[in-house]
Amino acid sequence: MAKRKTWREKLEAKQERKIVDNPRKEGTLLIPRPLDVDALMRRVPKGKLITITQIRGRLAGEHGADDTCPLCAGIFLRIAAEVAEEDLGMGVADITPYWRVLKGDGRLNEKFPCGVEAQAARLEEEGHTIEPGRGKKPPKVKDFEGSLVEL
Image 1 (tube, rainbow, N blue to C red):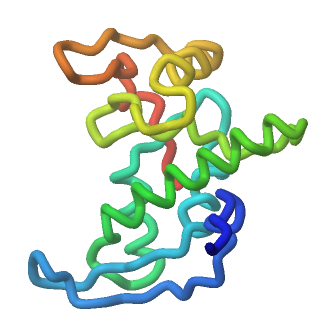
Image 2 (cartoon, rainbow, N blue to C red):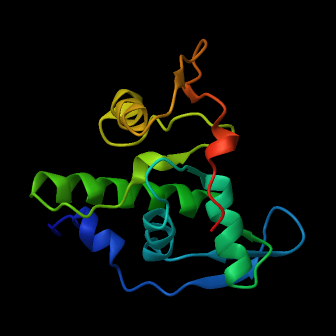
């Protein structure tokens, strides 16, 4: 039976980025590398935020594509977050600040390690106000647009 890859092995996988025809609409789609997503996340300073939509747009623009695969971007965001938590558990101080990445509408990501409660706590430590979720929707950062960073 094959050994499961660690989160770090998934992050550092020798994967080539590709530009393909977008199967859903006209134009091209970037298939990034996990390290591409991680690198952008690492550039978000304390007190600032970025959305996954911004990350996808920035990656597409940097590599000459019309869009970035939303599925790949989401998976790679999760991989980077899991690596950050593993590193933190091993005493590494300089980890990827994944908690600063929001959904496009400013909502927290329920797929992050430790859930939205942990993400909310870290964001509140950095000065953000968290509005409770409504119904099945996760909490949201109040007035998040004012804290978005331009990369």
